[in-house]
Length: 301
Image (cartoon, rainbow, N blue to C red):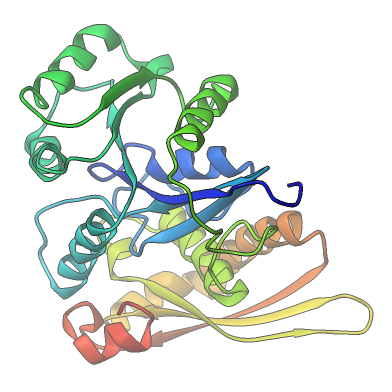
C-alpha cells in the first residue's frame, strides 16, 4: 500500500446450516487453515475471524457455526454467535449445499438473511458432487424472493475451484466501505495460537470418534513452550462429559487417544513448519454442554 491511498475495510459473515462447507470456504479465501473442518455437522462452534489484506483493502471473514435448532446451552451459544455476526457486518455470504434441496434449517437461515438490507452473496457449494446443481440453486434463490438489498449468486466447489473462490473474494473486496484496517497486515486470524491448536485437536477427535460422542467433546491447550532447538511443546486436554466417554476417547491400551494425537501433531507440524511434541490428557467435566460456567472456562462466551 502506498502512502496516502484511501483504505477500505469491512466484515463479511459466512453463514449457512451445519456441514455445507463454510469453514472450507473460509480457509480457501485465506489460502491457509484457520478453521477446523470435518465431515461431521457443527464442527465450528465459535465465530472464527479470518483476515485477508490486499493492497489498500482488508476483509475480515467471520466463519459462523451452522444455524440449527439448539438442544443444549452449547447449541444456544452457537446460534448466538451467528446472530452476533450478522448484526454488524458489511456483507453476507450464505453457503448452501447443492447436493440437496433446501431443508428446514436452510429456511431458518433464509429468514435470518432475508430481513437484512446488506449485500448478500448466495454461494452454491459442492457443485462437483451435485447431480442437479442448477435446479437446486433455483430452489435456494426462491427462498430470497422479495428481499431488499443487493443479491449475487455463484456456484462453485470451495475445495476444488480456487479460481472461482478468488473471483468471489475479489467481489467482496470491491464492495468494502472506506475505513482503516481493523487488524495489522500479516496474521490470517485473530485467534491465539492456543485456540487454533485446540481446534486442530478437536477436528481430529471429531473425525475419529463415533456416534454422538464428538459433540460431547471439547478441547483446550494449557501450555505451549518452544525449546531452543525449535521444538514446539504443546500440552492440551480433551474434555468429555462422562467417565464412560473418557474410556472411549482413550481407547483400548490408549490406541484411540494416540491416533488422535498423532493426526493432530502432523497437522500442527505442517502449518507451523516445526517439530511438535503434543501431550494430551482426557478429563471429565460432567454435563459441560449445559453448564454455563464450564462453557465459559472452555472459551464459549
